[in-house]
Length: 125
Image (cartoon, rainbow, N blue to C red; front, top):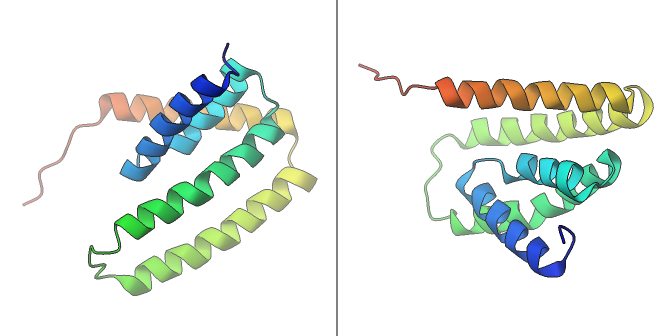
């Protein structure tokens, strides 16, 4: 049932909406694909990357009317992110064992979840 087309459409729409909000639907997609559907981590990562491209394009297009006052910072972050993505991809293929990568991702999700549960908005003066 978890791999039916209707469920995939519902989950894809929900996670795409979260991505548009900047919440990180891709991370949840990884969890869905590996834990519920039973997809291998390598395939889940590839699907996640393909999922991200249209989500990022549409979100960027719809937010283009918002003025970005720190364009040099955004450009620098985008270049650094592209370099980091290339490095991470290379590491995942040639250096890091899949089990270690799986555990590291689980720990990252756990820390992120705990942080979100304990987060309080700070008031700046």
